[in-house]
Amino acid sequence: MEVKRRIGILGGTFDPPHLGHLQLAQAAKDSLQLDEVLFVPAHRNPLKKAKPGASAADRLAMTQLLVAGHPDFAVSDLEIQRKGQSYAIITLGELQAVMPGDYWFILGSDALGTLKDWKDPEKLLRHCRIAVASRAPHRTDEAIGRIPEEFRGVIDMIDMPENPVSSSELRDALERRLPVNRYLPESVVKYIRDKKLYWS
Image (cartoon, rainbow, N blue to C red; front, side, top):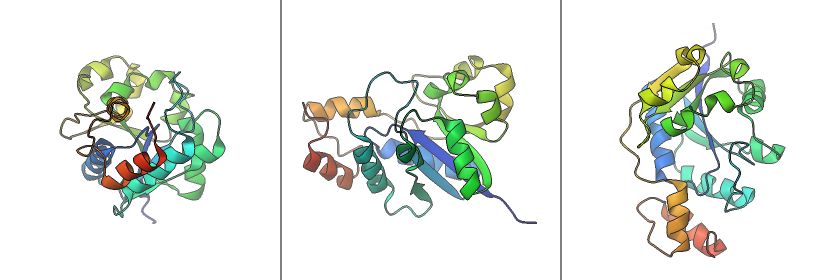
């Protein structure tokens, strides 16, 4: 009997991708004994009204720079190539067709409360599980309490240190020319500077 690969999907806008994303991916890999974590930059998150600060091509390139040197992490351009709104249910179907396995969508507790608003969540959760890491100031138990009870049986908790940064805070810091090297690898910082991303 063939053993299925255990694959984590870390989706997001990655605008910009930062070391907290790597920390979350590593925590999920360790906690759930995943074989691989796949970073999937969204072309357009249907739950976010604001347009990303960087183009899809730039966000993809920065995410590839972020995971470089991490052999258990990879980047998929499925959603960017598909264009339009990015839906987890479609992405999972496409991934299962080319990479059969057991899948987990990796979320911070701040995103868990939006699960009921995803496209066809009941169908999605019949084919994958959800891995959740606590993200301040959102308490995980409170986030779980806000989702439908039938979803709670497919949630696995991830232990990880508190992540003190968000992409929106980094965009603000970059616009104000503040140092960001604590939160971004040098390769990503150089890309942002060369492309003059997030500068008004």
